[in-house]
Length: 306
Image (tube, rainbow, N blue to C red; front, side, top):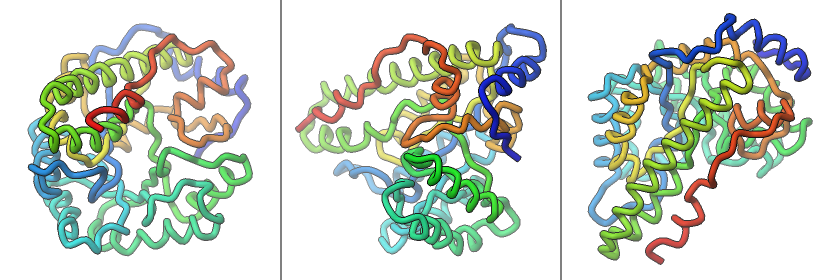
């Protein structure tokens, strides 16, 4: 159950949730989630979709990541190059959730069409997730609706159909690296690829720092986090380094249900949202001044190797 409350109520609850301490947690919990299975982004000429899947699952298994949820857009499964990748993901011990059939934004189509697109994804999930909980929903583009009416209507549909919302509290737009990486590989631009490695790690570090700062501002403690990643080529390259970074920063990898057992995820900021994270919404609802932070490198990446 989610509580839709005013910010005064949320602040009162946050004081209770803080358990009376502002001290950082020594081994902070984080759940990794991966969007856009079975494919996202352009392919570099030296990499197949199967290789991307193999490298991502290997990195997660090597890091002992527990039952990571991958969020599926089954509309791409008619491509023979990716039709088998969800089975490989499941064979690696990871789970699947609903990301809609077509990856529509919440306002892109009429409400009934959006709801049918959620339902259309379900036969694949039922088939591959027998005995497991696939009733987790991740909004495409993190867009929950540009009006309160649309937001409330979608949430009612999800609740009526047994879904829990897979929130995001750390997002550094890793998806933006995939297409420029493919372009730079095709051009043999090694200097740009080296720069992309640095941009990726800097963006990840900054996003983690910002989320931790916001957590302290809002709740006077560190919450359990949910990180958004994507099933693309540059993620396959960089995921081992990202996992090392999380270990260095004292994170413990947990499941999505364990992370979202943190009481903060019962809060509903009640904000219209066309693409922000859960912490973005909470900061906006709080009316606090945000922690200072630089822009993510997405505009730089869009120009690379063109």
